[in-house]
Structure formats: C-alpha cells, structure tokens
Amino acid sequence: MLKIGFFGAGKMAQALAKGFLTAGLVKGENITASCAPQDTQCVEAFEGFGSKVTFDNQSVADNADVLLLAVKPSVVKTVLDQIRPNFTSSRHLLLSVAMGVTVNQLENLLPDGSRVMRVMPNTPALVQCGASVYVPGNRATDEDEKLTAKLLSSVGTAERVQEYLMDPITALSGSGPAYVYVIIEALADGAVRMGMPRDMAYRLASQTVLGAGTMVRETKEHPGKLKDDVTSPAGSTAAGLCALEHGGLRYTIIDALEKATEKCKETSKTL
Image (cartoon, rainbow, N blue to C red):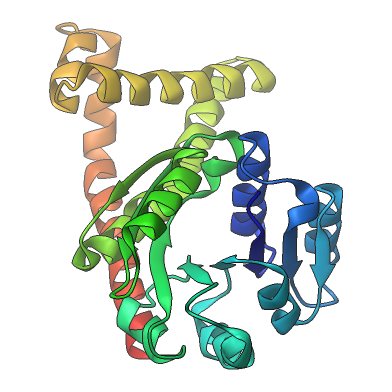
C-alpha cells in the first residue's frame, strides 16, 4: 500500500487525497500532511480522512514514499530546504503541484539524482472529474511515470505533456474551474432574474455545463458546430449568442487565459 505525504493541506491537497482514498489507492492512515498550526480547516479535513497531520515537513518525508508538494510557489524553496537532508532518490518520488515551478528548479533544490514529476491537476479531482497533466523529471523512471499516471487517472483524466505547455495548461485547466463557476453563477442569476427559483437555476445551470462539456469530449465535434446545432434561425439561442458577442464574452475569456498564463511565467522567474 502506498504511503503518501502532502506538503500543504489546502484545497488541492484535500481534493487529491479524497480522490486517492475514494479510488482505493491509499488508506487514510497511510497519508501524512503538513500545514501551519493555525490552518484549522486543513487539520480537520485530513483528520477526517483518518490521516496524520503534522506541523513539521521533515516528518512528512520520513513517513511517506510519494510526496506531493502542494504549497504556494513562494514557499517551495523553504519546504525543499527543510526536507533536503531527509530526501533520498532511492525512496522518494516528489510530485509538485506548485504553479510555475519548473522541473529544473525542483531538481536544483533537491539532492543530485532526485526523482521529480511536475504535475497540474485541478480541484474537480475532489469528485473524480479532474483534468490533470504531468511532466517527468530528468531522473524519473518509467515506473515513476506509470505511478503518477495511475494516481492522477484515479481522480479524472491524465496525460503527459511537454513542459513548455504547463503555464497555459495551468491557466486553462488549473484556473478554469473558477471561470466556469462564474459562468454557472451568471447563468443562474439570469434565470432568477426571469423568475426561476434559485435552487432550480443552479441545478439546471450546472447540469447544462456538465452536459455541454461531455458533448464536446464524447462527440469530438468542433464546439462551433455543436453551437450551430443548437441555434435555430431567428430563435432564442441566436438572440442570446448575439448578446454574448456584443458583451465581449469571447474576448474576455481569451484575455483571462492570457493574463493567467503570464502570471505563471512571472512566478517561475522569482525562484
């Protein structure tokens, strides 16, 4: 049975831990997570999994073989400096979720020969609908890649990518759920304005987004074609689409992806 450690116990760590537990890849008692003592919500979440919570990062490295670095980029160096004396390339595999931190930067902060994987999951991993990607480090083995793919696939989809794509992927699938939540909220607000009960509006809006996404994925049709299939001449959908184009929705979303990607690139330059 795997022994997994989390540096950082926030929402992403919680989502992955719950996904791994649901998939049966690890038992709660074989998970160790570290966080600040004042992060009571994080402590309660991992204790609820039946896991050990510590305020000492070295303890995480001592008690786990697969280590997930799920902290803010600004504290990556601090955490890796703390565990460096306890990190052994023969035992430990590090999976880094830290935004903008490159494979080379991770390897330079760890002992020579360390095995690392740069990964980017997203929070829908909590309900096993995550969209994850990974980049193997220079010393990662085929077995490391298989294990990483197995872990990430247990909470959704997973695919190997080239590292130059990681910043736009972070902007798309990493941050993307937040954009979609705004769209769902806006759809529901519009329906409430037209007289629909709010709880019904949220149910229908969320199911509509889920269904549309599934249509794109399963049919492999171009989204533009699927849009055209819904749009009758002079119909209500055409009127709504005209309003969206007039409001600049398409440009706004494209601009959001650009700004988020730029933020990721800025982060890597500060390490």
